[in-house]
Image (cartoon, rainbow, N blue to C red):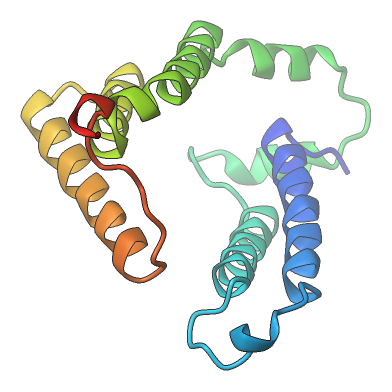
Length: 172
């Protein structure tokens, strides 16, 4: 059976998710954490379960993009295919966009303390979505600002984790 590059990546993420789930399940709680509603391992357990479920769906459900997907699925079991098909599949990805996103992530890590969580994360989401092809600027602006504000509020209130929302020049 021949798997596509997407299936190999999904299989790798599935293995990482199982390891992550195991580590979250065997995490030893402190005595005062046993009776709180939201434990330190609650979110990692939920995240790993969701990731394992999605990976299983991607691995088990056949992909039907075009009309001839049945012929391609029969061809997938043919072991005589060459590795040049895999090379062609890798070449179809936009490498420049990938490098631009990695550079944007590095800039984000550099500016998060200087600009604060709200501004730097909103800018990161805005420019990342723009790099990936979304061109409706007003829609990008509102989605990035609202989602970052909601995330900041939930982290600040539910988890009681302080994220500096404003740039450093507003602090003492």
